[in-house]
Every structure is written in structure tokens, then in C-alpha cells.
Image 1 (cartoon, rainbow, N blue to C red):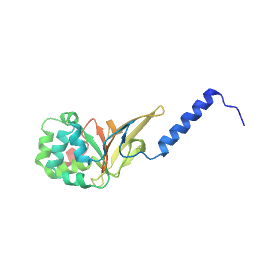
Image 2: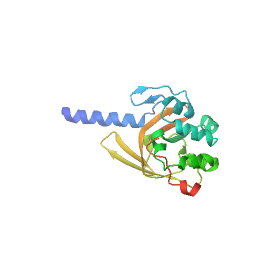
Image 3: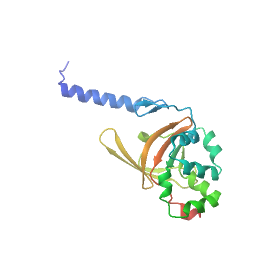
Image 4: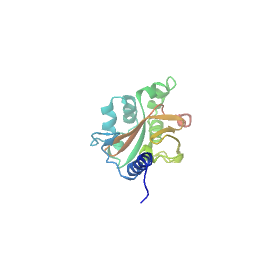
Length: 182
């Protein structure tokens, strides 16, 4: 049996731990290293956080609340209140006045299925808005740090669990399609 140096053993242990972390399924109630309640659906989780009141109002105005409460599995790229404040003046009001356009814009933020940040890859990702995929750019730094951009906006907080999916907080409204909608 070959002898291992301490540094070789430490590297091997790190590789094994990384493999276990990647391959072992994480329970929906895990966020980082602390357990969190995941018995709340996407809408309830957004409301509980306190950072998404504008998004919740937009979801309600678009008539999507029931859909996001009852959807079986979805990933929501959720613009925070701060992200909505970055929209050009009057754009949100224009969208709220046009519920169909608002519903389309919000559908562009929703991806079918539960996608953890670690599963995202560079390329296009289908959304609930037909024929309009998101562009994903993933940059991996070091072993456990990744930077994710969705249509050029960064994911600020990853993998917020909900009973019916995941939420990734983003820094801007994904407005690439707004001109097409209004």
C-alpha cells in the first residue's frame, strides 16, 4: 500500500468531500449550512422575505398568484424591490396597466423545474414565456464560488427554497423583452 503524505491526504479528502457534496441530493430545507423552513410555496416565501413586495404586487396584477402558489415545480428568478426601482421611470406603471404584457414579462422570469445554482450551465434556458429563452452565463471561481448572470443581470442570492421550487434573487428586472411587450 503506497504511503500518503499529509498534504496528499488533505487533497484527497477535499476531492471526496466535493464529490459527496455534488452527488448527494440536498433536502429542499437546506440553504447554505443552515436548515430553513421549506413548507411555504413560492408566493409565501417571497412575502416572508420582505424584499419582494413590488414583485408580489406585479404577480397579483398579472393574475399569476394562483399559478405560482400551485405550480408543482418551478425556479423563479426574482427581481428585488431595489431591482424594480432601477426600471426607467413609468415603465412599471405602464406594464401594470397592461396585465397581459406584465404576465408575459413575469413568465420570462420563471423556468419549469427546480434548478439549483450548481446545476445552471452556460447557454439558453426555456422559460414559461413561449419561444423566449433566458441566456445563462456561469463563471466558476475556485472550488465552491460561482457567479451567475441571467440575461446580463447577476444572481444576488441563490437557492432560496420553497415547497414548490427555488427562488434566485436577481439584481435587475429581466427587461430585454419589455419593448416587445408594450
